[in-house]
Amino acid sequence: MKDCLPGTICLAAVSGGADSTAMLAALSVLCREMEFCLRVLHVEHGMRPPEESQGDARAVSALCKKLEVPCQVVSITPGRIAQFGAERGIGPEAAARYFRHRAWNREARRIGAGLILTAHTQDDQLETILMRVLRGASPGGLAGMPRKRGRVFRPLLDMGRWEVLQYLKDRCIPYRIDSTNADIRFLRNRIRHKLVPLLDELFPSWRKSLLALGETQALVADYIGAEAGKRFPWEEEAGLLKIPEEVFLNAPLILREEAIFSAVDRQMGRSGFSAPGRKPPHRAVPRRAVVRRAAAMDAASPEDLGPVKKQRRKGFVTLETALQPPGERGFSLLLREAGSYTLKGRLICQGNAGLSPRQDLFIRPGKDSGDTISIGQNGFYALYPVVFRDHRSGDRISFDGRKRSLADILDRKAYSGYTGIVNVEDREGLAAIICTNQDGDLFAISRDVQAGAQDFSYIEVSRRPVTGGTDV
Image 1 (tube, rainbow, N blue to C red):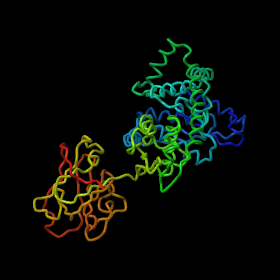
Image 2: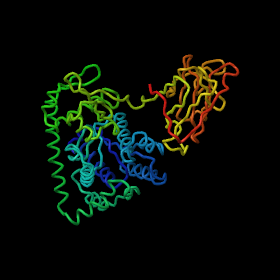
Image 3: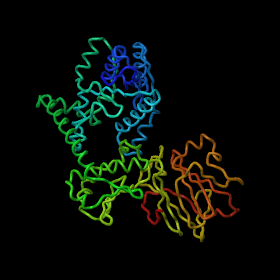
Image 4: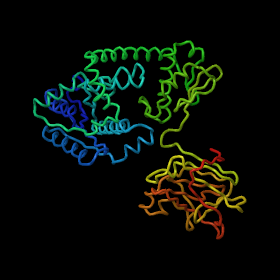
């Protein structure tokens, strides 16, 4: 605990479980002896039944009050983590970790904390390394969790779980038990309840050996990272990173892989995917197998690494951003003439619509449409060429004689109930706004038009695949 210098504000992340409760109890004594300021943050994830998660929050608050330690509780809206995980293509554990770390960092900034203390133990470290072994991690992954990274400090990393439980037992300190810790659908729980007991039975010395492996891999990772940094002086030019092909190809493959990972992190920091100096979001990190293929230079064609694209240009290997930052990605569909087109199926698959992601929205111009297209049960028209695109908050449509936003047209309750909102634009401006409610019903708001101009076709939902649209 030498990092907790006198006067330092330390933020302890306390869930209410055995590990974090023991850490809190010990810190409450040490902070008086070492004269550092202790604060507590509890994150209620909203993933379990309210009586359980709220019970954890009350227990942590009560213990903090007893120990005279200030406590802050952050509650995440139920369902938000699951929604975020689905959007990012990550599991609930990773999504919850994202929100938890975000809450830690926000609270640390608010109170000026120099350290964020977490209660990871040696058992957590062993489980983490086992998970990464099974997933085929790199040397950096096999190194496990560092005692300190940035502001995050793990004071219990050398202690076993049995020591934590004995500490609480000796002092008669109660703690909470998370019901999801027994759910073996999660990989960590399967390792904890199934694999670890088997290893204890058949390979008694496995813990010591695995920790030694982690220490060795940490040294390997440090060396590879430092060597790659020296050998690959990436140059910036017009938003891309480049390096001479001969420099790249003359290095060992493992260093080329590390150089690509490093360059991806750098591009993500410059392109808005993550803050500079921080790792890109989980979904943005390319898989090692893809990076290895790109590093091997088996093909001259561009390699899609997810967030970036690797290419060979005029004697250089280049990496450039392949996607727009999260929250700014969208779509557009260009219709130049009458026909059948596929509009993004995701627009009708949100909320409780109960529709398969394979279902698509069909746009069918009427027989006498000529240079126009008309859609919707109550109809609207537009002049070719027509573009369908994501709706933005500043968009306005001519409605009842003046320009109005969607929020102006719909009452607040109705507006919040619609998802997957799409604009239809033609050469005269915004022609219509299509909304999808949580039941999957479609509703179109059309601009002011002359009488008789809306006598055309309809929107329908179908399971059949349709092609013909041009993405722009």
